[in-house]
Structure formats: C-alpha cells, structure tokens
Length: 116
Image 1 (tube, rainbow, N blue to C red):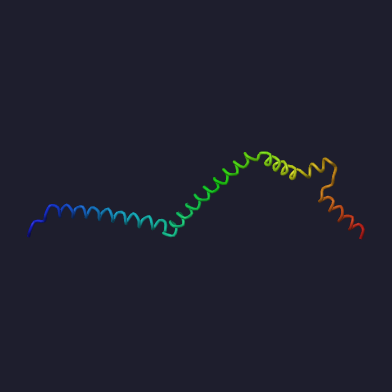
Image 2 (cartoon, rainbow, N blue to C red):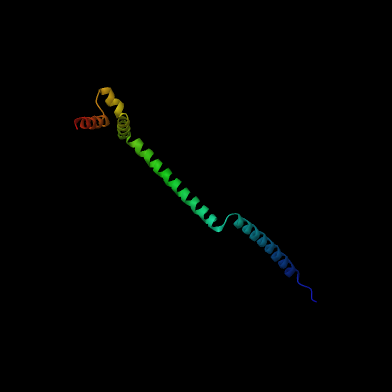
C-alpha cells in the first residue's frame, strides 16, 4: 500500500477535530432545546425585544414630559392646584357651610318621602 502524503494526514486530523467540535455543539444545542423548547425561546426573544422597545419609548415620553413641564411651569402649577381643590372640595365646602351635592340630593329624597 502506498503511503499517504503528510498533508492528507494533517487535513484528516483537522477534519476529525472539527467534526468532534460540531458534534459537541449539537449535543449542547439538543440539551438546551430539551430544557426550553423552540417556542419558548422564540417567545422569550420576542418578549425581550418588545420590553426593550417599550422601555425605550417610555423613557422618551418621560423626557418629553420633563421638557414640557420645565417650559410650562405656570400651567402645571394651575393644573396641580385645580386637582388639589377638586379632591379637597368636600372639606372646603363644609368649612364654608355649604351643603354638598350628595347631601342636597339626600335631603330632596327625604322631603319627597315625607310628602307622600
């Protein structure tokens, strides 16, 4: 039998080593795929991308809101004041001695019942 050239033997050894690495990678892939299915992996990647996009969009909206709030401080102060007055309307009306709308309605229904 003829002796094989040295280059052929080196190439065969390199091919066998590459095949071993490929087989190890395939086994690793199969193991990972068994732990988490293909649908789970795709779902996780899509969810991650959507979450990153939403958080980036939320940061942009927050930055724009900060800029607008800095530019329009007076409007923001009036809005906050109006909200405070709205939520504190019952105690304020009580201090002024005015009946609230709910008490006025209950008085009307009581008067109607007594009248009939």
